[in-house]
Image (cartoon, rainbow, N blue to C red; front, side):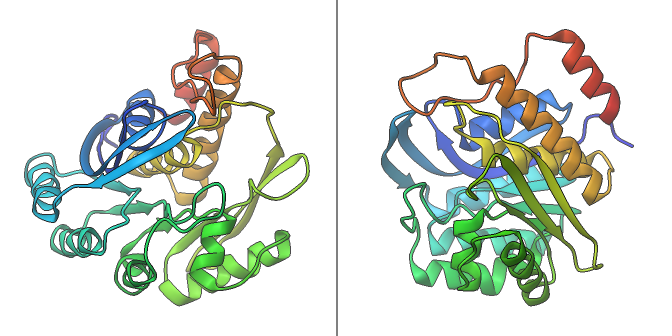
Length: 278
């Protein structure tokens, strides 16, 4: 088992450092992987919100992926923000050409306020071409609603939606329930092999949650690249993100929804976790 596998993040850049490529690089590095990147879009954003988005030219995105795949040969790819249909097609072409062992896709489709971040045409292209190539997709409830057309209000509806996505696209699904009411976090895993699992834990109150979706998906990709089964990879990734939320909940970085802290000061805490996944 390679202790320092290469993981490629294909995602947008967050100039404030809390989400996107920047969060992915921090996460992969903290977990002992080697992080490479292909930037799909530049964003003007901070902890208060997104001001503008500029897509990168498709040939430049393709060139970044090709350069990394030809030389570094990543074990896993994490895919984040892709809101341009041409970029979707470029990524699909690359996945078909290079056939990486693991592909984790965090389908960033809906804003926190519930607004769609991509056109219906792009969503349909993702459903038709990209989702069947993924090892795991990690939608939240709003994104799963977009993908299934079904409203989701409780764990039973989460289970049904996760199974529907697995059946439709033959990929594993981790449906994140952070938007459900109550004091518990509940995520649902469903796989083509009929593995079914609920991950439940107490919610952590924090104003600093910017980049949690990026962090979770890149942590899972790193654990998969290290050779752990999908159910364990998700549990290890959730342990890591819990520590990152706890370590960051009292930070004063920015004036809005602040970032997680990927490198906790507690050496004992990190050593215990690293011993688990080494």
